[in-house]
Length: 148
Image 1: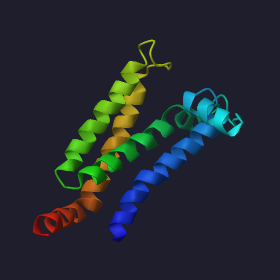
Image 2: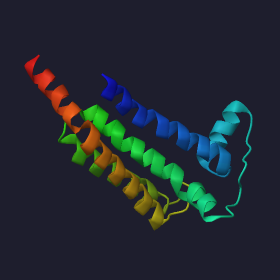
Image 3: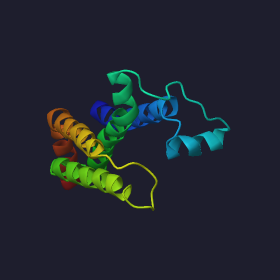
Image 4: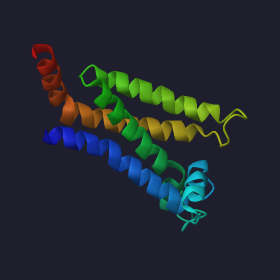
């Protein structure tokens, strides 16, 4: 049960942190504009990155957090050990597709190969954490479902 709570926390916490970082450092992102219109505010603390850390947070950290969360969410939905690889592949394809869609006029945004790379790194980290800390739990869940 404790591992399930940690699994869910690995979905929710990165999503919330990513959203918070977007609000703080990325006033020009569609997500922040929509959120600002809903709550009647639109402000940011950091508008232009000044240091490497500012730049990393502004352009990569939020996407990495959401990619990380996506792998955990997919793994949670699939609920078995075979799903680690499947969750990673689906998350990576989805992240790549979302970045590629920015090349079209359908979705505003700026295509960046480094976004794909950084999201892929976060998704690999998530898959590794699942494999090392949640793999056995998934086996137990599957055995319970099969036996019960």
